[in-house]
Length: 78
Image (cartoon, rainbow, N blue to C red; front, top):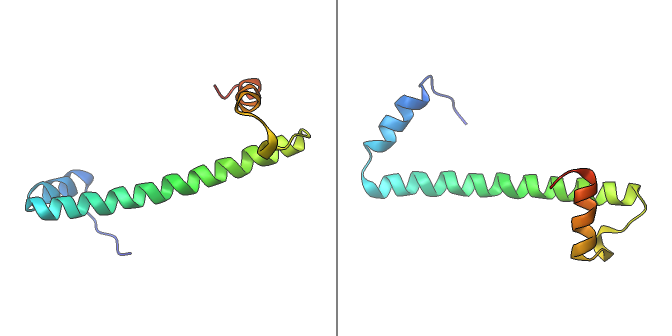
């Protein structure tokens, strides 16, 4: 992907001047990218929590929602 030497403000100005349909297209592409990144982060977090649970001798898959909540609270996540 190529890089441009433009400020965020300049890019925002360009997008604001696009016709509405092109603005929607830009938004859809950015939203798609953010969804993908969020999914990747969630997968990594899930892998870490499963590994942590295993290191403490518990199986995340067999834990009830209440047990998972308690596990998070013990770690100070909530």
